[in-house]
Length: 381
Image 1 (cartoon, rainbow, N blue to C red):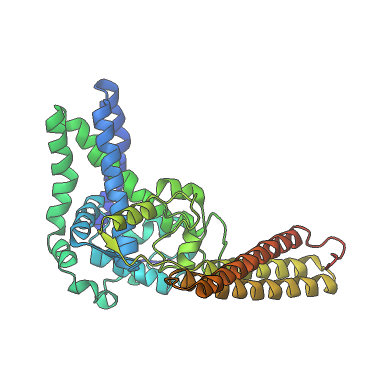
Image 2 (cartoon, rainbow, N blue to C red):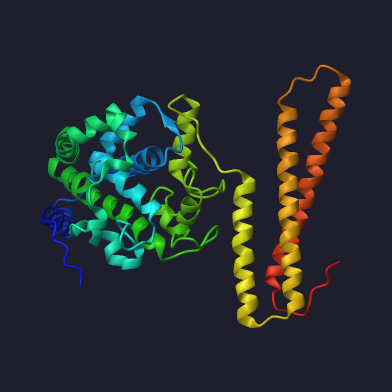
């Protein structure tokens, strides 16, 4: 049994705040009530803290998926202190070790291999060796003046943002206690545990769409309460991408915020995985699962050969599509000065469209084969 020393500061904090939240918040609501202003304070501070963690701590500082203007980095630093999840240097150092040693129970600070409780909050309550402070992996951030400033003044910022700001907003409205309870206490507890669900539940519940090299899973339900972080399998597969929800319809407000900020110059150099990389990862994962089913269900060899051929053909078509897509975008970006050059551009475009259609047909064939896996041998025509 692990006998790591108890971290009494964290233990008292994470016991006291939920207890006070589930008792004081409803009691005050019963006797005095909360109005729309006070609930808006709660919602706005909740979003401020959450997006500062997802957009700042995580996608900006941990993974460098984009660059941000100093003013935006300053806002994220303030919001991160309000979230009370440690300063940037500590948070990023832990998170980078998590990605480097994911699921390694000895080196991953919040390894899901140790169970839900440990990965959710248990790792914070004791001084485990896997979470020992080591800033050797954040030397780049130690050159960031805003990161260093937050690290130096973290405790003061925590008190100002968690007590001073809600109290001031309550003073303006005429009810300091209500804003402290909703915008301070309840917001603090919920925002912390929403983040911790990514460390725990997002490694246990969901689909492994892109890779099974780690326990990370995609879960659209978790994305709803974590500002888009629930697409965790995608994130662990393509951690340099500023998006977690890669589809346009995926709920990822952090992605939308970063993109909107780029339109006004607050963010730049937004990194994205290519469509080919994403498709290839999904295809490889689907093929691996299909071959495992073939072994498990003892499917005839002719089915397996047909599956392998279809997989290889899909890869070739995907590569061909990638090449023609690149050629089309390069041609499209050039200025056309002569009719002959314009004709060449149209040929490149038409070839790209042709290959794109072939890829669409290939994808349908592949999906149909996966659906019919194990049925009478398919007609390859």
